[in-house]
Length: 402
Image (cartoon, rainbow, N blue to C red; front, side, top):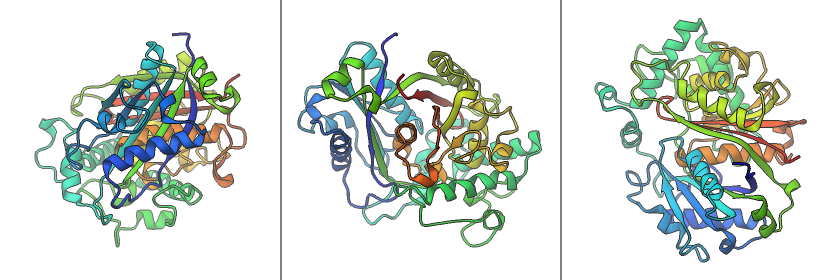
């Protein structure tokens, strides 16, 4: 396990609507886009993994690995498809890391994608709600129209009651993320800005998603099309690619853990698996939470961002929302969190999300983000990607090579 793994290149689509782009085209574009970043041919890639959550249900497409192998140069290579709900992208990255560590090759590609809208860019909200609901426990579906927003509305209510936080505290997270997304040209909502008053006022599109529970429209992430791709390499792989280590980012720590799928009966405010995975990633990287000053965390809903801030170790349980309100998550605060706009404003193409988190941190560590959202002194970055109701957790710690 002494082998070091590096991010050599990152590329993504604009998040939002891919219109009439087909799944084969999406995967081909993901491969070619990331290869072009470092001027290499796909044939240099030894192995790969692709993550998606709704490929069967929304796209009627399985065996995504076979579509990747259709790209000239990838045929006959060991490629696999992975699914871990909204952590599918993070799982694809780990899959490639483990293949490289296992000696399958020296260069790998991790792709995540989701196509959630039709060829006209429109979405079927009821269908998407049903499909995403498949990633919950069957016992927790009855009586819920939109299952995941309902589950997280319950988590949000619990967070507010247990910790004494306010709806306004959580709404401030969304406001901050829309402000960040304004400077991310690839973000879905970069043309939209909201105020705290708008995020709190029940009018127009902003409404309570479930009667009697505090979750509002602006607390929710976007329904999004998009793809993202990383080229990962060992030190030998970097030599083959002709890429200097100084141009790369090391994935210094990584871990994955899975809690029981059913929300009932466990503490989703302090999810055991998430904390365990984050701790293991820090230990592997020989880093502490205090070292991290750039992060991308899984804010499918604002309460998840608050909990994610706590999982990072930036504050104690129950203080995550206040961390944002106090400006500590801003570009020049204690830790620049979700400078990309996060899932709430950048968009949430489910399978691409975990890959894009590492990509955003890669750009931060290399000083390639837009100047308004670029951390001036990026030291160590961390990501926290979750699937389900805080069920599957993929955590990474990244730094510039020494």
